Image 1 (cartoon, rainbow, N blue to C red):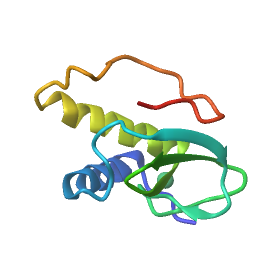
Image 2: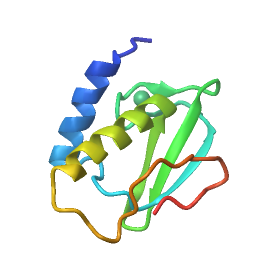
Image 3: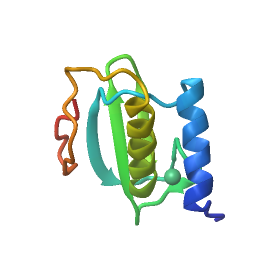
Image 4: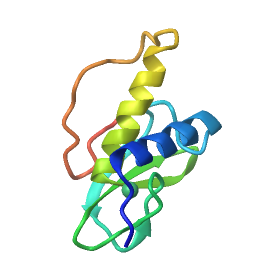
Length: 106
Ligand SMILES: [Zn+2]
C-alpha cells in the first residue's frame, strides 16, 4: 500500500476543506475504533484492522472516517483556516483529548 507523506495529505486535506468535501467546522461526535478497511477521507488509503479509525459523525452528513494521523492533520488545517476567519464566539479554542467512546466533539 502506498503511503502518502504528511505534506501530501495536508495538501489534499486543505483542498478538500476548500471545496467542502471535508467539513471546516468542529460540529460532530468523534469515535475511535479499529478500522475495517474503510477508505480514509483524507488520504484515501484504507484503514486496516491494525490501525485506529476515527469516525466523525454529523447529523447533516454521512460520517467521515480518518486515520488517526489524518484526523490530526484535518483538525490542524481546519483550525488554521478558522483562525483566518472571523472568530465564532461560541467556539472554545484549546487543546482537547479525543478519547474513545464518543466524546462530544462540539
Ligand atoms: Zn488517512
